Image (cartoon, rainbow, N blue to C red; front, top):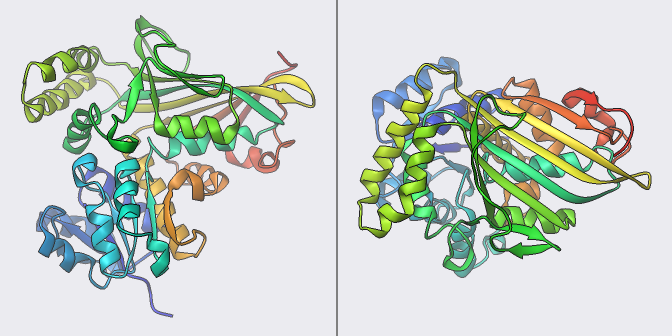
Amino acid sequence: MSTPVIGVLGASGAVGRAAVRELRALGRTGLRLGGRTASALCAVAGEDPGGHDESVWADATAPDGLRAFTEGCDIVLNCVGPTYRLRATVAAAALAAGAHCVDVAGDDPAAEDLLKDGDPAREGRTVVLSAGALPGLSSLLPRWLAGQGLDTATALSAHCGGLETCSPTVARDLMLSLTSGGADGAAYGEALAAVRGGRRVPRALRTAEDTEHPAFPGRVALQPYLSGESERLAHVLGLDRLDWYNVHPGPAVRALLNRLPASLAAGDDPAALADRLILAADLDLAGRTPYYVMDFALSGTASGQPATAGLTLRAASSYRLTAAVGALSVDAVLRGAVPAGVHFACDVLDPRVVVRHLRSRGAAELRLTGTATAGSGPAGADADADVDMDVEEGVL
């Protein structure tokens, strides 16, 4: 059986380079590395000289170059953006070349574009979207947590954020997310909204500009934000309540984000604002160690009694987390573990596999806490092998 050709588009970027390493760790070799800078691609290929990787010039905004890159691939991993401008551009090119596709982003706009043009399942092709840290891991971890001793789950509180560099792609996507990124042409999410009674309720929460949270060092700002992914998560877990907070430890980034809606309304150039966001992130990071945290607190019942389960993930980089989820999605598709069609990664990846991979690769530290007894749930039997345990006595 021949080795499948895996095309990694954006292989020299922050996510792409890490994704190449994750794919190699999963035993995937002979990669096709795509990007716009030959020297950078050669440097990535040179990290594994025995892997026989191929470097190919490719630009997601150049149809001919994109077509040449995808031709002959069995699957394409897209690590380039801006996501909400490209939408399904890369996935469509991969499908036209007869290849599967995994996109570390894509989200609802890409799914809508793909299904509008006909379900790829008809041709036996698979597309996995939102295969990153957020969205992606942000829904996979709570699903894993729900299996750690809880019989039922009723409420989830999530706090995600950190202190790290801001890539140009992330900066541009943040600008676009204010007016796109969600389903049916809506914005990616809604500030201050939360889930109550199993449905979205606007302005249910308030921002805290200067506070503390035990999972984060120092003072932080907490911005309530409900995305479509979070709403789907609440539905899947059967939650009555869900509170989601984006956490901003850096004052420069937070100050710019506070001014962002007014700046855009005043006609400021989004590209210039994106550059300012990159600079603000660098200012906040100066002299400090980068980190990224995902903290989840889930409540429900265990053995008929009220119980809690908590999970805190700490990593040096959200970009590496995104790379890991993307690589695991590629591996799952090639193993035939994902059916044909268009899917979000959180719906088709096994959360247990993801958790084990993050810990075994040293991509993140994970700590499980709570009053539920790990091992009693459907995924809890191997919890000790997955995360550090700190189970509290009794029930709340």
